Length: 462
Image 1 (cartoon, rainbow, N blue to C red):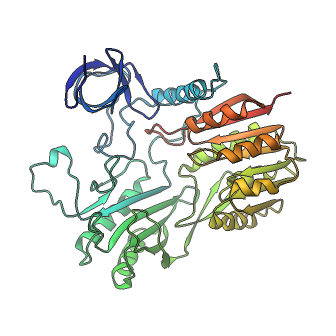
Image 2: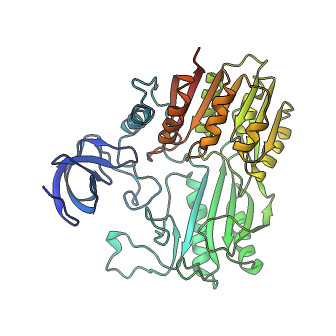
Image 3: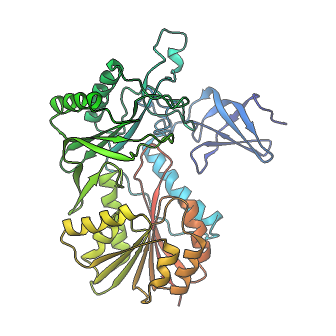
């Protein structure tokens, strides 16, 4: 069968591919069908046809898979926040473990990789400690709202997948704790009643741009960050007063101000409207101050499981030197500090290094130091071979020059922390000339998404 765009074909979903889409085979051609799971039989409408594969969406679900569940969120399937809500959680985590193993097999050419069962998230809803909601002067309607008199000129919510301008007016997101949704509704009412306009994502005109909510799991407190296009205290201060009066758990309200067109909820400057400009939280025994724009793992309890795995794989006795690449705000360095003689962190982002040093002072840690600069350059300045190398790269993985520097340095042990199995496998394809992979532990930090963290333990060969 020669598939064509807009054609509708019946097919069985035989697997779920890395990236989250269901896989069907039609006359030998791979067809990736969004919002499907193994065992579904669907009528799929082809939306994109390439030489070796096609992409499709469900036109009709003919026979649902036994691995399907009823998603509790009304936006499931339309919102980009969590596209796997309709898949049973046990099967989600089995898929994630398999995607890690398959990445290592197909990309790193490592057969029978020692990949353990996925460590589950403590909670599968309400686990996110940070949420960003976009404002828009053009609301994207749900199917049941089409043809109604719904107001299309205001939205505060999450984006339709793969778009920058399609914003749902999200009444509640189940990925954040319940109080976050109450704050979201209070802010929505205020903005709708305000005489300042919401921002147009195409026109780049308007005042209200984003609402960012942060939650301290340990202290059960909240930070509210109101992002606007310009400074206007007369508009934002009454909102801050409304929030703090209605929600005593809100410890701080800040106003980030940005005139940039980029759809990023980071201000060029920040004004504190109520409380202190930081939120305090803990991962395990360690305390962290979190500002509106600083990095912090979005699943606090999941981060504790992730770092515990790093500590277990590190196998430190207390006398070792640890080198931590892409150290960020120092969370892994701080976690390992009590098990090592010295930890040295390398990081490109200056604000992250400043936060790392502050976090060490907060926790009374004096055996960590941090070097600012591009990793591929600063790594060359390390003369002593560390006993352990920790690598926690961004989703893109390591720069090829960093991989070569690691191979030249050749420490006895490496613990690699990955947020992308494909780039971890690509990096290991190079590293396996000198290292063997002893264990890989997937850790689910993001239930109802296809994203998976993994920690790998590498030992030098010979």
